[in-house]
Image (tube, rainbow, N blue to C red; front, top):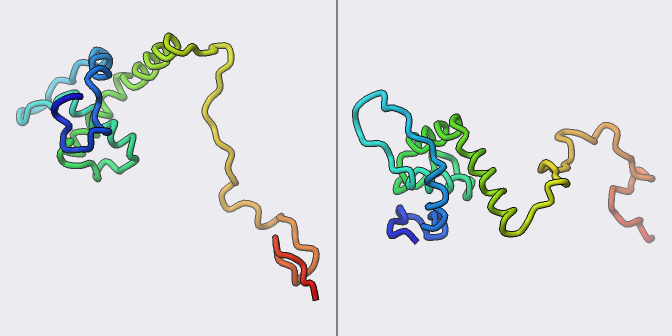
Length: 141
């Protein structure tokens, strides 16, 4: 593990071995438009982005030890425009294929089946008797 965990639990940091694989895929930084603070370290930025994606927290809820939320979000958008995350996904698939194997002939998009929002009330099935409620046992007496 890296010596610097950016003030978060070790499970949210990027292992050194994984970072060695990732850092070569990161696009070169955009030219700075103004002077000021130096550019945030790529590893810290990636750790912060992974933290948001893993925890599901909002950008503004990012622990300050990982960097300013606006800076991290800017880097996320920069890397997104550069195609970094798609490249990372693709390289991850190839690495997994080498380790475990993928059946490239049978692929599917991720999906989910859920109830339609606000649907079903108008045309749903009615109980057999007015006193009987849905999923309620009949009165024995």
